[in-house]
Image 1 (cartoon, rainbow, N blue to C red):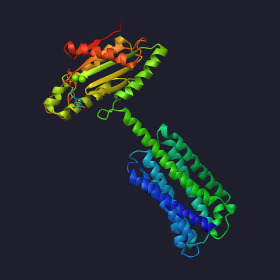
Image 2 (cartoon, protein in one colour):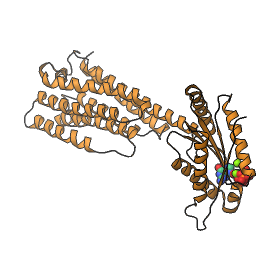
Image 3 (cartoon, rainbow, N blue to C red):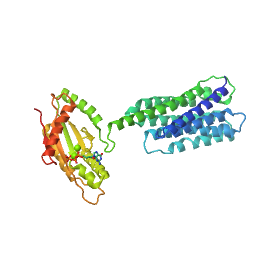
Image 4 (cartoon, rainbow, N blue to C red):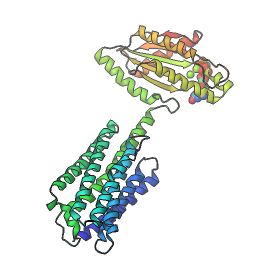
Length: 385
Ligand code: GH3
Ligand code: MG
Ligand code: MG
């Protein structure tokens, strides 16, 4: 097998990868950045096919244009990862920093002074910059959940950065020197390493995208779509965990349950959309007036729950009273008439006798029921025993 065979194989593999990622984009258009990764493989494939033409095609195609495509590979990969990791921001500076200069220099060393070593050196220098930028992008952006694929890819790109820099200082035995003669038997693993990196980039991108999608799904299954608060299922998980912590650390844990008053008549009088606005506004008010460590959930309909770690009965009643007045002060925006509404509150605290979360919730429900019974828009406490 000669270098030419390997290059032809490499061009074919890169074209297949471009098609593979393109098909992923077609079937899952909501994964950001996929088209750039597909374009990157296409550019890589084009570059390799032009190199294969060395000796039989004009220098412009085999040196300058193939170099342009090669330099675009990492720019497109960068934009792909950027779109996936950094929402709403893609800058073109990597293109202007790392593409025009090497192409101009290479054109000079092709037409003014034909010097292959200088061309290789130029590409090595600018490619090492691109690999470094890619590694930095992956290390500095993205969620904790996506850290493993990001770190692995960053290590690969840092390896390439180091490899290219080493090549600059050791040009005589630089493996890219073999580019000159395509009929040389293989003496270097460089082309194979290129294919390997392309495969890892493609699969790494898909892995990263899957990690994101998985995180999105998990978030969706735990949140209430209308208000963005936790849903009943997520609250149950959180509550069981908090009850265990409260039991182990001997800390108080309070539960505030609230239900909007006469909500049905808001729907009936103003329409379902206004009803939804009231629910969203209530959720906003709860978020605004509770701590970051508190858990807020919508149990369904117009019933909400706040679970307050490390909070005593007295404080929980004060919190509920504060929430009650804030909710009574709310006004639905964009509504000509001043629609106000209120909520009734039930408060209780965890005791180590509570066998389950449901037991604690039932007690909160009884308190809430009393609040409704006592004329609504008030707070009631239910203690144990
Ligand atoms: P009370 O003061 O006793 O709590 O009376 P209420 O009218 O608030 O309670 P009721 O249980 O009679 O009515 C609740 C209404 O909430 C009925 C239901 O149509 C409405 N509802 C439930 N979920 C939603 C929702 O997601 N959006 C809107 N707009 N309304 C909802
Ligand atoms: Mg109600
Ligand atoms: Mg209700």
